[in-house]
Amino acid sequence: MDENQYRLRPGRTLLVSPLRLHRYCNVETGKICWLFVTFEWPGVDAAAAEPELGVLSPAAQRHLCAVLQLWQQRLTTPESTAELVVQTALLLFTVRRPATITNETKTPPAAELLRKVNTWLNDHRKQPVVLAELARGLGWSESHLRAVFRQHFGISLGRYIRETRCRQAALQLRDGNLTVTEVAAACGFSSVYAFSRTFKRALGTAPSALRTETP
Image (cartoon, rainbow, N blue to C red):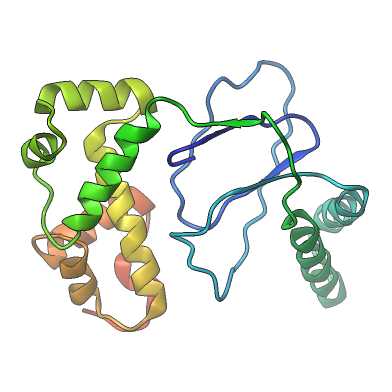
């Protein structure tokens, strides 16, 4: 999850704010049931909000069972839809209270590298990224930086940068204060056309779909 790793066991929950870059690794074989609940999170800076690791309390388990039962009904009535919203909100409320869990999180050695990359990107957020310049800024050769980054995080450095900038752009588009063209410039893309192409490839939708205005 960005700079940190979280170990999940049965009965554990992980609350991830929208648009945070995350992936799963070292998943044990066997029968696993994944439940992903997505929701709007008004009033929260999604880019800055830290993930929350917790325990599925008895109250949360009751709300979870209610959510699953309602979902299995395929929401055939307005009443069941409204009840699903209520139970989902209650589930979110109960799991948003992080439990004190010791020795369950750790900061991997790669965290410092990722922190430096993110700092450089933030300092140059309005400029197109040239990997050779990024590598020099970190005191690495470009080839070595590419190799080490992929080794640690399982994706290319170029892909990480594209997806990170597109997620930052998505947050700005959702705010609705800037046009697509202005967001493209603010996120370091050389043109709105390059931005739109990269955004759709990274997030699966056009930038204009996140706002009512067109560039």
